[in-house]
Image (cartoon, rainbow, N blue to C red):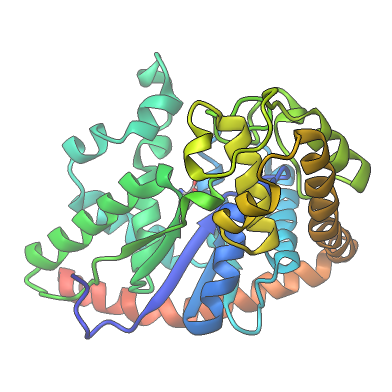
Length: 341
Ligand code: TRP
């Protein structure tokens, strides 16, 4: 349990990529926007994590551009830089510094259990970078450099967050500093926002899927959005009239979830609205809604990206705020560890 002595604080991050899609918006960004209304929040573009990807390493220009695109997507989706601290990770050196200390706290056995590393490193573990291996340690440092208590993440990041809790706990006990770090809690977004591929309702919508028809990119124009929805896989039956009717119909369930999330209504409300209808008419309405909700985001992203210097300035100011918040924590960490200062 997080002790009451720790002020509620939200931290989350996304890797810079230039293919943000509907899953990122409904699964993460919408939630971030909601959380910033009631809590202090930091939203980070984790560019140092991007170096662990083969496509990231050695592509400095791409990382810069992708960082700006993700920043633009945050803002266009409603993240407000006047409310939340919005910055890129590499500009705040406390993250890397704390990650080193945490590298000495975390155990090899803990990291060996991380399923994402196993998936990403594949058959050739010995060729994977050490950075990819310690990726979750840097993630723990991202969160704990601010003593953040709440971390909105998807299912796939839950294990990494548990590791962050283990690291916090071991640090507190090893250095005899009870309650120094909070044990950050996941804010798991509801199933309604778990967006699946439009081609296969059992797979997550993903930027790495070969088929562009599997996802709706945040930068897609109205025609592309409508066409992808029209071509989305379904089954011949009409829409069900209850939750039970989704059994064995992951594609139908996914499209209904997407509608409900975009319309800001419950799944049951969407089911009631379309019960018994054919997919062809449902898809027309879904396409109309998706176009209405997403094209303004794309337009705002384009507007923001037309002035990269403005985005860079905004990130720099965010980084200054983030530094001001994490520097005292790092100073305390160094004292607790016993470094001369
Ligand atoms: N690992 C996260 C992901 O890929 C990104 C991330 C890095 C993150 N640091 C974080 C998320 C800190 C939440 C908090 O989705």
